[in-house]
Length: 197
Image (cartoon, rainbow, N blue to C red):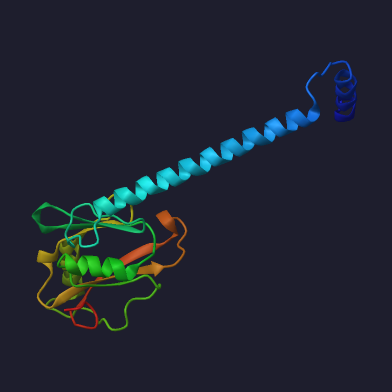
């Protein structure tokens, strides 16, 4: 049986079913039910939005201290850890200035850019030792990645004297990476224009 035959059979059956309720009443009842569902759905969404807004307002008051454990944003998360470490998770390349301000408030001299390029005001760290030794130092300052892929733990106390960090997106869209981007971290010379110190 094809579609046209099925439609023909249904039309024939429709005439055999007696209907005592007027068509206008059926239509108006359907509209009333749909309207009631829409209104209750909008009310539920508004209630949920209000609950989230109140929860965020209580969790993060306007004057929250910068080292508050567990403060989160959708784009990134910064959490103070025992022993002086700072766990950073980057979920989206948004609000680099906010992340930079948060890390600096937690004692990390840092420059954060998500433009696909490092901060031009920063210059590479030229402390003692060769490049291999400097990479080893970076490995003691920044451990990770830990799960998820764009997470790291920064140990500000392990920074060499006169050094800071630069965090930047090395690619805007990098296939195979979680979130479609990669994050790079490097040691830089601490300066007011680069790391704020």
